[in-house]
Amino acid sequence: MPVREPETIRLTPQAALARLLPHMLAMQEARPGGRVVLGLAGGPGTGKSTLGAELVAGLNAGQAGRAALVPMDGFHMKHAKLEALGETDFKGAPHTFEGAAFVAFLERLKHASGPLRGPGYSRKIEDVVEDAFEVAAAVRLLVVEGNYLLLGDDPWTGVRPLLDYAVFIHVPRELVRARLLRRHGEEGLFTEARNRAHIERNDLPNYDRVETSKGRADLVIELDVTA
Image 1: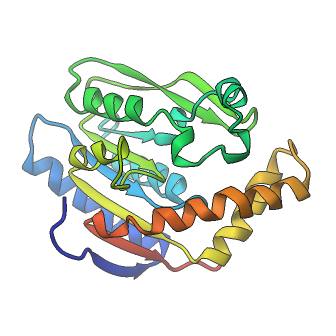
Image 2: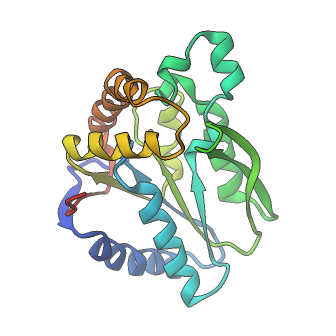
């Protein structure tokens, strides 16, 4: 865990990739034979998933199969469980994830000698999909992305020690609000009124909570974006 304030820089998404890609390669070179884990943390709607996928694609362009993306979203509680608990209005909040299972999965991934499958999350059905991805045995670089990687309370506090390098992605709150409204409306599953209410009640408070965890990162990237 960092003992000093993280470095903070403002970068475009492409400049962020240009910064992170060689850094991961350098970490891999310094640890031959082991797995290197980079964490991309930040609030909902900040672009972590897109940046993570592009970073993995860039790493694999140089050597196929050396990197894999590991999304935290697959560890949402299943929707049926949230309904049983009466927590559907707060879906996406830290307590609506299987946080301990996520930490255990990362621990296995970091030291696995064989292939390992993990769950994903589909916005088309708003639910968990089992065995959505597989991390092959040959993978040496893991890019883990999710909102709560740097939270300091249990069970999330178990994530940070498993990250070799932690990056926090910041995007302004008002831009996040607009992005989330577009995201929630893309699949047409809910009304606009429902989506606006969910964002104000749940998504933006989650964004605010995640913002308090940036001090646990090694690097804070303020993304230079307009939409």
